[in-house]
Image (cartoon, rainbow, N blue to C red; front, side, top):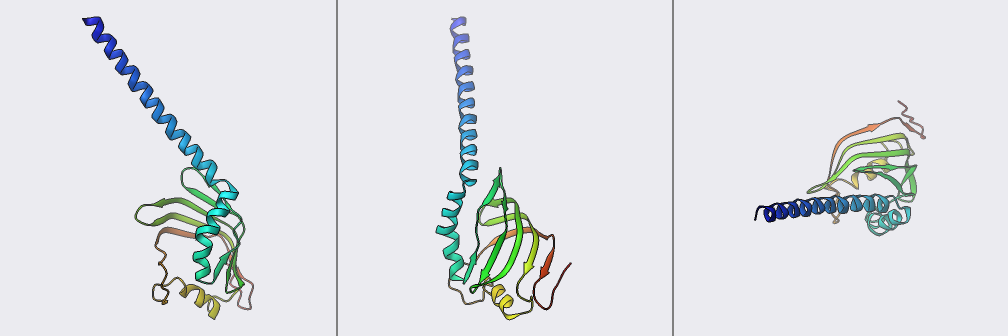
Length: 168
């Protein structure tokens, strides 16, 4: 009778071990699949073209999107990026880094690093003011407002290619 109890205990321990190892294996495979999928340029471009670009177009914006590098668990690195507003270049950056991206009740980023930002329009000019107003809640836009929590934005360098150059 005592041997039978030890056999049952050993079976239970073995079952728990295999269940735990199976759960870890599934989590590892899911994390690996997510990482590979998120680093796939065709998938990124499909996602951007299907979801982001149409929303930007409603605001007369477009972004020269070439993809990003995803680093597990929650960081994204974008290469050279151009923001086009009303069919002309507004801002060009060398790269953008989003660190600790999260999604709870809304989108959030712990910090954003922008490297070498070039403004193609004066900060106090009409184009820049119109661009900023496209994101304000009182702009009369009937679309969904963009809600995001941003911990900090760091700009490595910023300069303008207009008559009122602002180099730091």
